[in-house]
Structures are given as structure tokens and as C-alpha cells.
Length: 104
Image (cartoon, rainbow, N blue to C red):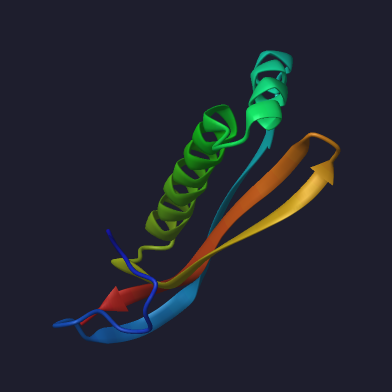
């Protein structure tokens, strides 16, 4: 499965747009990470616990988007984007979406 953020795939021709492929996950912080993050806030710098949580969330959303496109019979996904939204205090959704296409 080819996944790109562009409208086109160099060297490939899109023969059909199938529909929107999407994948999402909702993740919550945990108390252990919050304690370390609070300490890091005192001295400044990157909060690695949250960076890893976000990276894992993006990968899961991408994988779910890919599975959605495969169910539609797509060969690729173009115009891939991410969106986030707060669900409740301490929990957020990561959404990956793009156009599932057939290559000709």
C-alpha cells in the first residue's frame, strides 16, 4: 500500500478514487507518565513520555486507515492528513484520513 500526502504518486497513474479511508484511536494519559511530565515541566525540555504516546497513536491511526483502504480494494492512499481532537480532559483522538485510490 502506497501512502502519500500528495495528490499524485510520481510514476503512477490514479485510475479511480474509491472513497475516504480513515483510521483513528483515542488515547489517554496515565498517572505514571503525568508524574514524570510534571517533573519535566519544572526544568523544561521535551516530555518524552508524551512524545512517545503521540507517535504510537499516529502509527495506530495510520495502520487503521491502511486497513480501511484495503477493505475498499485500494492500491494506495493519497492526500493523507492527520487531525486531533480532545475527547475529555486527559484523552485525545488522533485521526488519519486520505483518499483511497486504485492505480492504473
